[in-house]
Each structure stands twice: as structure tokens, then as C-alpha cells.
Image (cartoon, rainbow, N blue to C red; front, side):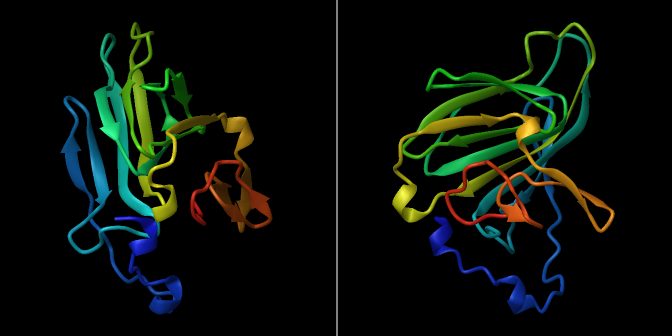
Length: 189
């Protein structure tokens, strides 16, 4: 399903009220589990978001870590944001990029890409991992685009406080700030 095909109610349809609470279900990735919020039986997507996974917080003993083997993606973008820890991204474009806390990896699959996500090379000490990975549907006219990968260091993402709440702007615009992360459709994250 593409973002343009979604028939999701907007916030104005909900009169500012919570319309639905989605309980996540755990998915085991071989020694490491994530809680998947989207898709759910009652909501396939929210805006462009078709998958939304919360990983961790998890602690790995020395010599162990996340080991997501190579797998393909098509027609979407993945956004990886970590609160804590590090994941090593490798893909069929030849990119090898660690993602660390508060940075963003944006992988646009388009017509197709293969990637893996594994612990970094230094597994001599106990490591922690906590983050979010989401998959966003590409608009119909971009689903067959060339695959791409862009890393955004933490220092490039706006961080600010609004009404005594700390905010990290991953994607989009809010309160006079704008994230540099590429958007394929208007998004606030």
C-alpha cells in the first residue's frame, strides 16, 4: 500500500481525542525482540508509517549483539533512530555505516535494496540497545526510484524544548525548526 492510497482519518476527524490505542505485539528476531505497533488488525498504517517497531531497551552480554541478517526491501523507506547503543548498517549499495544514539539512518529502498543490521565490531563489553525503526510507504510516483542511503549525525537534528518538554525533531517541521532528513511525503516525526 502506498501513502497516497491510505484512507486514514486526520486529527480533525477525531476532534483532538484519542481514537484508538494500539497494543504492540512482540516479534522475536533471534535472541532480540521488538514490539511492533504497526501494522495492527485495526490500523494498517498511520500517515505514511506502515511498520513501527520499538526495540529494547535490551542488554547484550560480551560477545553478543543484534544480528539481523541480510534481507530485501522494496517501495518504502526505513528510518532508524536510537536512544542508546549502536547498530552497524551494511547494504547492497556498498554502504557500511554505524548508527549511534540520536542519529538517523534513512534507507530508501525504491526499486530494491538488501541490508543487514548487526552489532558493531567491538563486542568485548556489555552493550545496550534501545531505539525505534519505522517503515514509511513511498508515494506512488517514487516507489520505483533508485535506492539510496543517507546518514544524519545527531548534531544535525534539531533538539529544543517546548512547554518544558524536550523534543528531538527527526523529520519535518515544528515550532520554527526543520529537520534536514529527506521527506518523500509531508511527515512530522
